[in-house]
Length: 219
Ligand SMILES: Nc1ncnc2c1ncn2[C@@H]1O[C@H](COP(=O)(O)OP(=O)(O)OP(=O)(O)O)[C@@H](O)[C@H]1O
Ligand SMILES: [Mg+2]
Image (cartoon, rainbow, N blue to C red; front, side):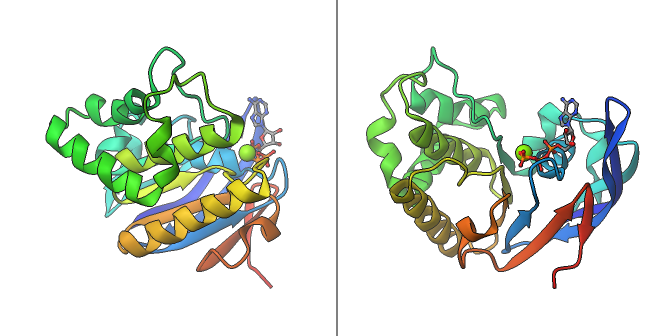
């Protein structure tokens, strides 16, 4: 579905992605594992169009994503929960969740359906909906960021180190939410990055390993 072909990228003159070649397939729960600084965030940002590539292509079902400006990539059903999970503080959590769909111009009825589906996957969000986006703990913010990514990500969701810094109880809830999602949306491709492989337990169907900007074959 999402094809990454010989992608390289540099930040401030330093090469941080080197010839990445892989495909994210529909229905996959995929982990991208690598140490701090390996390039996980950069890879997701490259897919989202938040960083120029020095070479290579990214395509979704054969359509060249590089021709699509970053802010329009959600139109392809791609959702993204960045590492820093920013919620707009002057909006409620519900408004934060609805926002990407409103930007897409989806009808309210469709947004309601999506929100209901997200609450099925992440029931903990129910009681957070009326709260201000500024009134969440770090862990709650991660749950809300997952919900927001799922509102737009009907085909692919990219979750950047969601388990980092989560207390064990919340990490279990988060993992359960991903299992439910995998089950309820069997065609959805879920990509989770992580620097500590053990936090993922038996969650992923497949794992890619990044080392200094390069994909290496798992042993
Ligand atoms: N804004 C920036 N300016 C300069 N260098 C950067 C910047 N962002 C990332 N880098 C460099 O790019 C490389 C890859 O960083 P990236 O954030 O993608 O790694 P990561 O695998 O997500 O790490 P972490 O596990 O710490 O989140 C690192 O060497 C980092 O120092
Ligand atoms: Mg990162």
